[in-house]
Image (tube, rainbow, N blue to C red; front, side, top):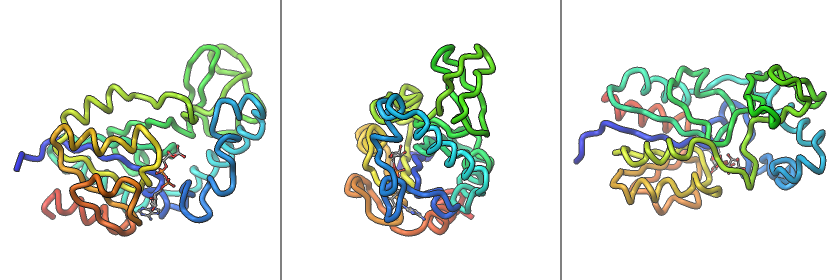
Length: 233
Ligand code: APR
């Protein structure tokens, strides 16, 4: 057994479900109430920017009303107490990993609390609405958009993610349906590169069969238990 020195954790909407944040594809999820092509594509934004801004304004306000749950806190404990390298790659656009205290978090789909100016390409921490077309603090253009990766756009920091997967001894996927690439392919990349792979998810996902081990249950129960296994306490 190779010594465990390097863990990459991938998280999806399921890790934030117990904090009260809607997932996308569970019953009643966001994609049952909104058409992806209307609110999560550049074409949708060009067609009806106000609809898209209101969709993200509501999610940006909601995320500031909720708190990290036991799963986020357990990953932060691992980050603080384990002697190895831990990288959290999240598909989520909430800031619950950071608010729980995790130190190395990569948001491959962007962040709700960040606004992107397509004119000067600066990013600004943003907690309020964007629907009123506020001016970019840097260049004053009135074109700020959610700093979120839409379908058809390139996910962020892929080079750093693949570099981390090349070093990983263990890849753990938490709370994701395995429906969206490239994240859904990370388990195969990690396996091909020699890592052990573990899935912690409420239900079996589209990718469960790729994992060496897949545990079903709530993240709030499974993640603290798994972290205790790693820390030996
Ligand atoms: N604990 C653990 N897993 C849970 C919980 C929970 N309490 N509740 C739900 N889940 C699981 C569901 O079983 C499902 O497999 O979380 C997963 C959520 O899947 P999705 O809703 O598809 O969310 P995600 O996998 O993060 O979606 C990926 O798709 O729409 C895009 O950009 C969006 O980042 C998102 C990407």
